[in-house]
Amino acid sequence: MKFKQIIISIAIIALFGLTGAKVGALWPQQQAEVVVPQPSLQPLASPPVVTAQIPIDLQDQILLDRLNSRLQGNPDDFEASLLKGLLLFQIGQLDDAIAGLQALTSQAPKFQLAHLILGDLLLARFDLVDSIGANGLLKSVSLEQEQQIKQLQSEVRARLMGYLSLVDGVRVPRALLTMSADIRYALVVDKNKNRLYVYHNSGSALPPELVDDFYVVLGRRTGDKFLEGDLKTPNGVYFVTSYLPDEKLPSLYGSGAFPVNYPNEYDHRLKKTGNGIWLHGTDKSLYSRPPLDSEGCVVLTNEEFTRISQYIQIGQTPVIISESVDWISSREWLDQNIEIQAALETWRLNWERADLAAYLEMYSENFWAKKYNRKSWGVHKKQVFSGKLFQKIDISDISVLVYPDTNKKEPMVVANFNQQYRSNNFNGNLRKRLYMVKEQDQWKVLYEGRQ
Image (tube, rainbow, N blue to C red):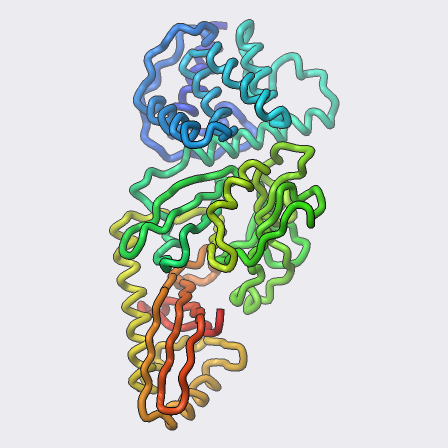
């Protein structure tokens, strides 16, 4: 029995101590690795059934400080309370863990996962529990209840993997290269981690700052969305288009919804079908849902949907959804910004100078626009340039977002900006969008159109 206790203690410490251990050590149904620094493992000599203070190692302290910081900023951060209870159990403070979870279940009585873990910790006073929801009292449950427990196990696994794999503030998502001053925040969804990150626009030449993160529920089927009804969450660069309050929605959508512009221009090009991809809340009869339980939308708890609303500007806020977030250093971020800004300036200058050959050289052979392909675009521009005595073109309020998970080998970005055009026979301002692809080390325009 003591040997079994030590093994379980090691598994718990390996998970909650931010090691490279597999979550499968605690939940064997699905394994995934967390790549984080490896601390020394000190197994508990006995089950954590007393409240005596056990020294906390550095990694545990970092995690505890982070959770306390979250709770200080938002006492109703129920996920942070849940994770803190688990961490307190890991470091041997069982009574504190139970007290915290009892307070949590009182605050959030519909949080089924919190009730399940509280039950496990109460049983831990008297006996060992092999894994979450696998105690002896649950061996005689019905098949339906067994399925519900499995869903809760998958939820806690997703929450832990998403939170414990959270990168430090030195690295930033590659997707967020440049945000105009009009964009205050951007949302980044990592489907593999069931995590949504909120980044604050720190201003020109500064990487964005992580300010919040959430567990999210995604489509029942994994992979990129292509067909209507395929139950998948799409990958791409999207923008919030509107807000739908709860009183105008079925109860399924909880506290409200933020639709995004799926299918976007690139989705149409790929002949993707479907619509109605939203960020929305959870049915009010529930607190949360399993990780893969939507029809393709990104779903938050109602409390967290309300919290995320403060970050969203209709028509402005980008939502980048990818299979996994590509993290880069601040230096890489700056280098890539310089590179794409230089490409945009070259495109602008070639256009302004009416240098037709150099201008068209910056357009991909696969270029498309509303009425044009690459060949017809060249004919059109040659005719336009022939009537110009001068052109003055300014672009401002530039945003550049890296497009995730394309099937192309070449990197692709979405550039949005304000375009001011002056010439001898036409003046005009508009909001423009370019999709640019890097072909043979040169950035070229793949799509051009109004926003």
